[in-house]
Length: 442
Image 1 (cartoon, helix red, strand yellow):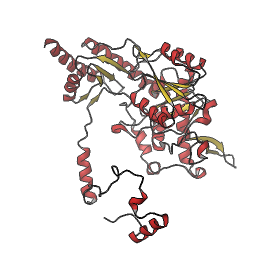
Image 2 (cartoon, helix red, strand yellow):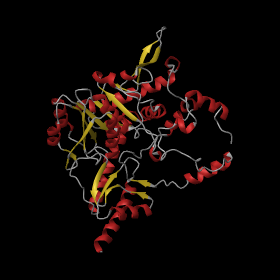
Image 3 (cartoon, one colour):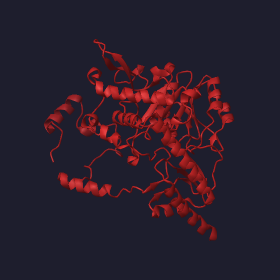
Image 4 (cartoon, helix red, strand yellow):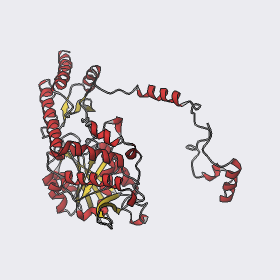
């Protein structure tokens, strides 16, 4: 197979000499020997398209898709109406990219505008950006929005998804920003601990609703503590819950973020997903990325424009609020099509089914001997105590059922959605009942 470098070795040597380097290794002199590649990568010889296809299909066949899923923890198994893929699988949408010439990208801009409108309606906030890479990045970007020279300390609830906390810490490390984890009490944020940690240099507080353990946080007292300290409140919400629960806007949040995967995106073994971001009008100019707006053209016809572009590719680097490069345009469109397909009442019905089935699952598990770990209200996820997490998960896997996420050897985080039928739940509980019963006999 031919190489894709368009110049000869002689030309490369001439360029190196002109730059003052003896050879390629000299050009990378600052790269340590321990990480510098001295030999070609151990790759197989090129193969035909058919041979490669067969090889990739064989590898893909090793993936296992469970018959029934009772696990969430940030990625959720929801039904996606067929019209969603019918629309978004069109070639013109698949190939869409960043609208550098916004005026002639009206279709892309309109799809983003519709998505932004949906997010504002869901969150109850004034403005939304065109999306970011995933929910964890959205949370980290929101924290970056809030801090300044006087307020650079970030508080994060200990009930936030560990993956989100990890990304927030990674973002903050490079900016030398302190991240403090707020202690947990009975599976939820401890308000007294939050109050004690509030200092004049605290920029914001990040809380997840529902939290990582599935519990619905009492947001009102947290909001009061945060705003009394003149800090900003960031809520990371599962968007499915916003069809039936109070919105971040109603709680008084300054910024709302989250993973929009539940809104029309398949599990896909972990991605691509999409992070949504919305804020009050006061903070709109601090939103990272871009915001699409609606206007009229010179003939008075409806038109769309890039209203704000707070990314470093478009404005001076020192003025940019973020260096994030692009948005999840196709995923945003898929979310918009999903919401248009199900409508407000449909989304509410899905959310109600999720909650109802999760509560039924919890009651049945409790009767089977799995006690609820936290006596707190929950939406569609909850934690149970188990005698042996590995034993229970193995028994379920033998029946092609993916059980809850193991938090440790004696706690499982369960999830139910509209995809789980009563028969599936009963079958799962019966398997667990037999495992717990055998353990008790032993």
